[in-house]
Image (cartoon, rainbow, N blue to C red; front, side, top):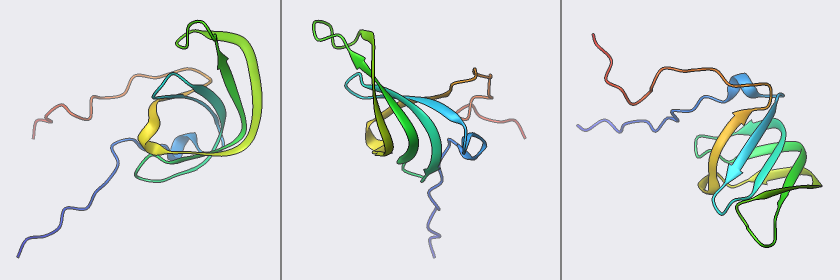
Length: 100
């Protein structure tokens, strides 16, 4: 019998729950907010969300303008990058073969 391999996310965001994170999306949008929840598909629930508006002439350039979005659900398939607002830390490469 083949055992079904349980899908599990490589990214564990539990340590960022109730903390401020910044998210970049496919297409160039960026937002920050307090992470309230997530699932293995990287769908995110953010509260107190602020979107960073883009330059109309150059969609990959952010302006100083922001808009408040409040509580939002971010679709995991469009999430490109997630990082904590208070800085980053190095983590071991999850794709590298471990000895042992």
